[in-house]
Image (cartoon, rainbow, N blue to C red; front, side, top):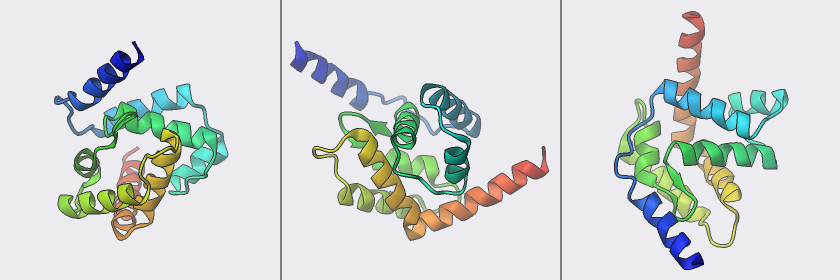
Length: 150
C-alpha cells in the first residue's frame, strides 16, 4: 500500500503538465495561503522582504509551502529547474536563470535532507548568485513601482 501511495504521489508531481507561470496575483494568493498555514513573525516577514531567509523552521515551512503550491517543487522529485526559470526570469535570460537554478540544485540535492531544508538551501544559493542579485534588483524596482501606484 505504501508503494502505491508513493507511486501515486510521484505521478501527481510529474503529470502536472498543465502548469503555467503564476501571475503576481496568484503569487500573492499563494503567499497569503502559506502565511495562514505557516505564520511568520513580523520580524521574519521583514527579513524575507529584504531577501534575508533565516534558517528557522517557520521560514523553511513557509518557503516549502510556497514552492509546492506554485508548482516549481515536488516533495518527491524536488525542484523543476525549467519551471523555476520560467517563473522567475522576468527580464532575465531564461537559460541563464535555469543554469543558476540547476547549479544550486546540484549543490543541495534532496538526499536524506528534509524538503524544507533543501528548499531553503537552494533558495539561499540562488538568491546569493549573480542571477539572484539581478533578480533582487528587478524585484526591488517592481516593489517601488507598486508602492508609487498605491
